[in-house]
Length: 339
Image (cartoon, rainbow, N blue to C red):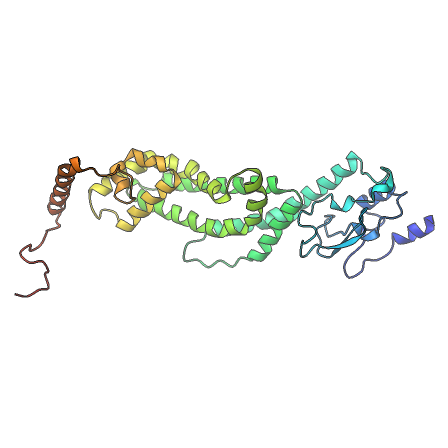
């Protein structure tokens, strides 16, 4: 019997790679030493992939249990959607505890899975995030979204959701620190335009980043943190960029609003609406400014204040006339009509 087991260690893998490693593998040695008395565990229970990662290679996984044996398709995920690095350690319940891995074995498996994440998964994701963060609205960056989604799917299934979320937020936070430093170095006369550029660019980047991280958002951020990925990332922009420049930006916006066309109306509208979407309470810092671009900022109109509204309109018309915007010939309703 021992000779047969020694020979099984040298069996080459088939086209599905359904074997548990060679005789020199550390994980195979540990598992075989602890499961030596269990003869019912199939050799294909622990498919391996390059780098020693367990349970992540596409192929058929064999699952043994008291309810019978069945094949699990790791490509479709129909039976193993929550695949983890410990799935390959499942053995029949009648093994009387001999098949249970001790703490040192589990620590080794977890360490190997984290090492694989650090070496293979996160570096590829980090490169893709870098490219998406620096793109402009008119850029067309070639990124394999299917490949990125595949990495994220594996990370979540291997119980790395918390680690992946931490790395993602840290990466974007560092990027926003650089953006804030660039705005700090820009002249005040161009701060409104430059702020609009970075806000627009970051928003466009999130339109690519958030969908590709949808699996992390659904099965970790929403279900465990009760939050939303896009809201979290926009909050990072508010904390590390907008809030740091708000004290300088707000007076410039109020001044530009009092002098029509000093800044392009589309830029003014984009910045004011963007600030309001980040934190609606900022509208209370300049209600007149925000009410010009966002409805229902001011309280509802009342009949007793109609004279005040008329006086305000007259004042605005006078300011426009003084700034070179004549009212034109008021003797006709339409300038194109001929008498």
